[in-house]
Length: 170
Image (cartoon, helix red, strand yellow):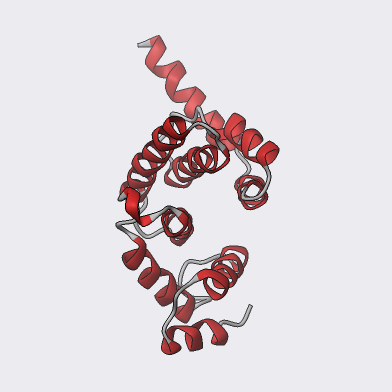
C-alpha cells in the first residue's frame, strides 16, 4: 500500500514539475538537433504517468530517437514505441489538438511504406477543423501557430484547406 501511495505521489509530483511549454519548445528544436532530441528523451522518455499530453511528448521523444538514430533496427523499434505511445495519448485525451498535431507531424514525416501513418487523414481533418474554429477550438495561441505554420509548409492541402490556413489569425 505504501508503494502504491509513493508511486501515485511521484506521478502527481512529476506532472506538476513538468513544464509543457518547455517540452513544446524542446520538441520543436529537437526536430533538427540531435542534442536537443537526446535532452528531450532524458526529460520525458521514462515518464510512466497517465497524463495524455506528457505521454504524447514521450511518444515524440521516441520518434525523434528514430529520426536521429543511425541503426535501422533501433529506428524501427523507436518508431513502433512512438506509435504505441501516441495511441495511448490519444486514448487518454482524444480532444487534445496538441496531441493530435504531434501525432500528425510524426506520422506525416514517417515513410508510408512502414505502415505507421494510418492516422494522417483523421488528424489532418481535426487540425484543420480546429484551426478554422480558432480561438474557440481548444488550441492555445502557440500550438495554433505551430500547427498552422507546419500545415502551410508541409501539408498536401487542397485549395479549400489552404484557404482555411490563410484565414487563421493569431
